[in-house]
Length: 282
Length: 265
Image (cartoon, rainbow over all chains, first blue to last red; front, side):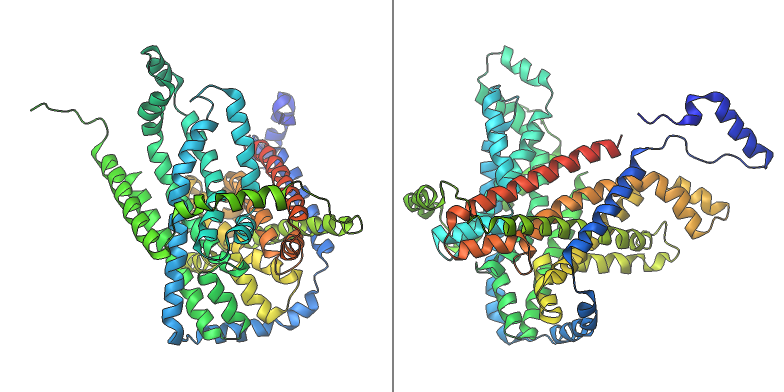
């Protein structure tokens, strides 16, 4: 695909090299370049400029208000700890929702991942149907599912857990199916010959081999789930997001500052902890 | 007593046992705290099913006069994601050069840069949107800036990691012969890391397509359209918009997947 002209025709290459040598230079230009990258860069630049023009953002108006951002941050920095018990309890609720949805989806993800992987049951129709269904679920952002769950389950942690589960399960199904499929066929064939049933092959060979990847995916997803969960409150479910949006809209910047700081701290701790575990076991 | 040969390494076994114990403990604590019970969910299954079959299905089209508006909001969402990711990527490239100890001309400040990026990244985009729109006023611009902030911070981290993964011999040897900082960047970093950067850029674009739907709930875009239909109880129309969002995301994912293959060739 990427035929460099100088490479395709040695005479030309010699000539350019000689040219360089005459000037006392060593040719440093890398020959193996991907010709696609410049095309891609130009395409991205054009598309971005077009999108910016399409958005018709009122830059002047925004620029005139930039100073206000500083004021807002200044207000946010005046931490107000008077509502601490409410903020803490909603933070705990948010963390619990994130963890619960992660655990439930872990189980569901293993079950559906088993159905979606091509090498477990060897029914192509089943895996194609499962995979395309979950591709659809994954394509719709989480808050949309939570909004719909709010409608049919009513306010409360149930809607949060169920809504988060939809997206997390879909994510796990795809990644677990990939992990299951990466297991060498020889292992499965060897067990098949002994007459083991499909399910026991899965339980005894496929699942144990994929376990370390499952743990890694779960840790990665906890981070995402927590930040999604913090958002959920803003679209109407409970938790810390509700406190943040409520106090921002009520000009209670001190309380909002505390809540945002706590969200940041928890997210940071999860990230750090996960990086540590990864370093220890890799 | 029979002696058993351990089948898995001890530290791995520790990891799994720890994970299992942590999972069970967290499950119990969290179930207790939120009073969440799957059984109530299953007991409510009828209402759930009724909602899906009665209100949700079949998907209905919005009024013919509204259709151009809906399509326009989809384009706004795409444009928002595209432009904010690109601007963020350009900024992130320059900042990430200062975030890696081995590349930066001021290695002492690398930690500061990374810490700043971590702070920006760990606050969700919607929270940024809320903070900004109390100062900048409502509109697409707020969504744009909010998306820029989070994707900028994400890409700073990803770019720094890409640079550290690539062998540092090139940078070191150039430094040894006395190359200046811009020379080092253009001759050593760019050729070896560009495809990695672009691959992260594409990933970020995928994430931002979803995020801009959400951030659109405070600004413009298809998120706002969906939100208004759900709030006015037109769930059948909402379903067709959800399908539209899904189609949009899947198409973008396919395109970026193709492009990534081409880039990493």
